Image 1 (cartoon, rainbow, N blue to C red):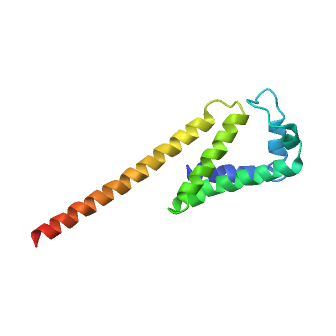
Image 2: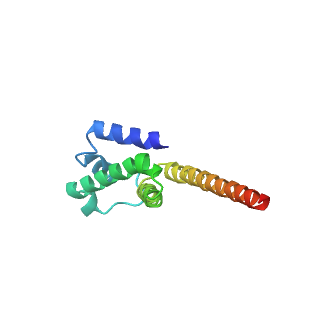
Image 3: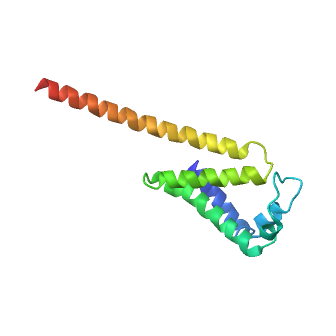
Length: 133
């Protein structure tokens, strides 16, 4: 998943529409794919669409890199869920956002289970060692 987000950031920066804010502004004004319309004051504001584009790039970059930092993980995941929920609320693009959130949830669950297994093994070893003495 990290590579997906990092490649998304790379190609969005390379395209140019994301760094000048026009990518989001254009998409927000397309009525045929809108689930809920973004208010015109936001969709037509180059400053706000540029800010939203840079926030999107920053969150995607964090999902690619900072997800591996244990202390940052809860915040990064919350930002990722917020990003994908906002995509789902504003655009009708199928199940993309919900699928990404679901896959992220599977990754988290696997990580927590792995940590729980490590703790269980350590407890078993410590009990075994202390019972021998």
